[in-house]
Image 1 (cartoon, rainbow, N blue to C red):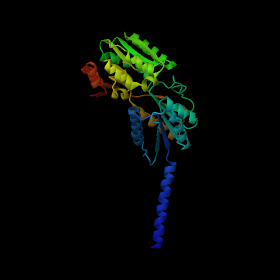
Image 2 (cartoon, one colour):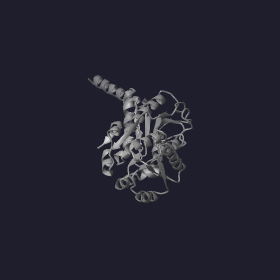
Image 3 (tube, rainbow, N blue to C red):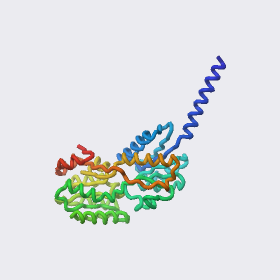
Image 4 (cartoon, rainbow, N blue to C red):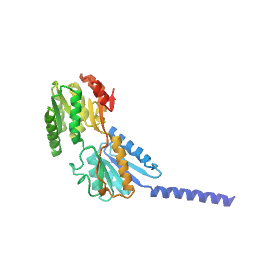
Length: 324
């Protein structure tokens, strides 16, 4: 009996040791986000679903270490340093701030950038085909989708004449975004109205002073200053019965009349496939930046009804999602 007892204990110890060894050898992937809103949740869901499709078992054959700064950009750097200290095999970052924090923390661990905008223009990578350094990723290139977003807004507002564009005047990217919208708007027979602001307070005052003029709409371009006050902007746009077109589903859920942008769930799946390439031995610098594979049109029926916009059947059928 004593022999059997000792034998049983030995087996248990060996099994426990095997589990620990398997966990030690299983790859670890860090995920760094500024906060987890709708977009990030969809991104993480897409990563998790595709990881399973690729044959991994979370917490058994792969570990996903998520760090959420909960809106505090100052918390990104310590979180990135912590993930590097854990010796993760790859880092997934969402947005510019998280990517910059990861790059400051390591030049060795592969970083997979997930960005709704153009990572080249933001100097996050050197080129599409050869990103350079330890970075690759998936990008929405939302600026390049400007023409499609304006075309869809024209379908919704048949008498559209002017689009108001707010951006951070302190940043060159803001001015560049407006210039691009202005060019596309002119091509479509529209006028782009410039609202370059330098502070959140200036933004609020300018938004409150917008007049309700027939044929006007607010057209969003990616901008940290504007997005930081998006709920204020959307609330006042609804009060002034001003149609709004934003860049992704998050803003439609918060009250924008419409949004057109990359599917973060699908970007998550693409990201998981890039992580798999890296875990299989590919170097990040040799993996080209991928473009978002799917774009969604989201309509907020409640907001449209509130501001007096009738969504015709053609645009409702075209929508990927209608919030009622």
